[in-house]
Image: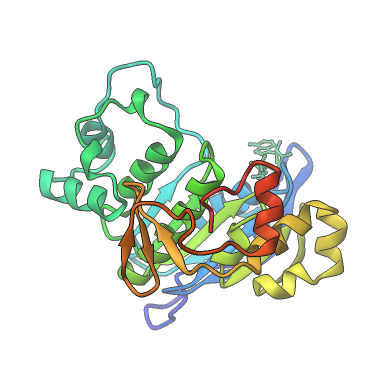
Length: 280
Ligand SMILES: Nc1ncnc2c1ncn2[C@@H]1O[C@H](COP(=O)(O)OP(=O)(O)OP(=O)(O)O)[C@@H](O)[C@H]1O
């Protein structure tokens, strides 16, 4: 891949073989600046393995993985090998692998709405706060490519939507490309430009609406697809901010979303099932 090529990363027919078995095979993908590409698929379908090929952590056993020369990558892994019972402030965590100044640390945390957590202990963070801190750490060096492996793990449904809004905002402000992984179908579909559905190989791919209509996607996810489509078809007219306030499309702020706008009928049904309150 040359400097003049706009693609940040590209996989061509890439696959990984371990212990005589293919973990994933035949993956073609590319991510360009400002693009969000999402890998979906059931547990064990090869999403993290594919992301690791894109990152260069794993070299493909067949096919090719190329990154733009000099590309800076920010990575939020699915798991971190850290003993969370040990004392560790957010500021120290941010600097564990990055030589960041106080100002850089603060600016990155401010971008993800987590500035007030700078001196908090990592072990005391809620699921949503933890993901905001992880995102802040990944964007602190202004990466060209952001790889997010399950960025909403441990986050409730309303928090998930706020995190996906934040990821879109980061893409808009930094102009980076984003490769995102999820085994959850819900809001992730709406946040993506391209969706690649994996099941040991590329099962189907396209825009979120292409994939949500594809028979192979339906066969893979069965009834769970309905929830994804319902959410995908729901249009946001407001954003839930980290301090609990709601910002509407016209820029106005209010303290909560109750009674000030409506959720789509599909959301009302989901609300009854107990998940989507405030998700709007
Ligand atoms: N280093 C390894 N050696 C052998 N098998 C592996 C290795 N890493 C992953 N696997 C296997 O490869 C398959 C794909 O794993 P991968 O972590 O890529 O799936 P995933 O889609 O990200 O799953 P999940 O949604 O559960 O995170 C799994 O069956 C996993 O057990």
